[in-house]
Image (cartoon, rainbow, N blue to C red; front, top):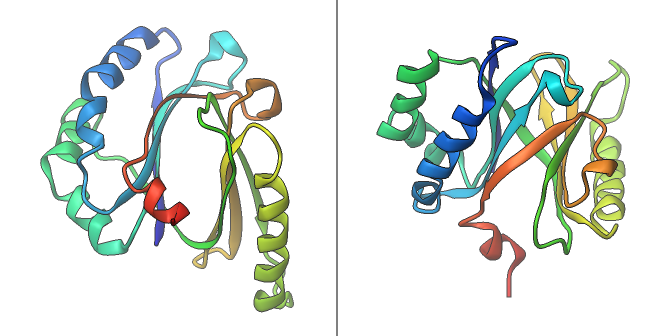
Length: 186
């Protein structure tokens, strides 16, 4: 699997309803992207307490090959044509824990530096236990931790059904989840 995200910072006076309309128009196509477990489309709005207006997409891919195919395809080309080529952040999944929530409205994010002497195997076990604990809370659809080895940081993303629980003020305006059921298993 692979975790990826790109983010477009938008002007303070950008009409965010344009983003919502774009998402609503394009959302059905995301359910047909091969290898996609889920895509959470998010909006941050200054008017709602965010530091800046932004539009971003968080992906969980089955494998890196599926992510690469998406980046060279027409869907991502449309992103580039509208907003320019973004920096795409990627993480290796350290843990993916699924909760029982059926819908989500918010995404929270936590990042921390990994110490030079930390045992990565023990850290992964600790994060897996923490992930299962978070996913067990009502209102959590999923929590995933990505390892970014270029700078040795861990980032935890949690998809939540209650905005009050999300610390970042990041609103999920659409979730496409064509591969989520397969990840849950039988």
